[in-house]
Amino acid sequence: MEDRKHHAFGPSVLGRRAMCPGSAELEAKCPNIESDAAAEGTKLHEAVYDDALAAKLGEEDSAFVERARNLLRTLQHGNE
Image (tube, rainbow, N blue to C red):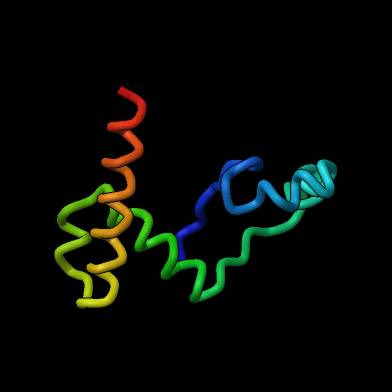
């Protein structure tokens, strides 16, 4: 699996950072071992922004990507 660098205060870890701000420093010392589930989630997140990747997805994953794209459009409209 490709090694990916995640933001230390990204959305998926904000709850942990709020409870234990020092966890970012400790986690930085650990190797990034990605699970199959994490790899699948990353692929789906990337597909939201990549039409070619999205075109290769199955029906269920394509539906997830379309819902995410609709949510992004709604949020972008709210910020205009």
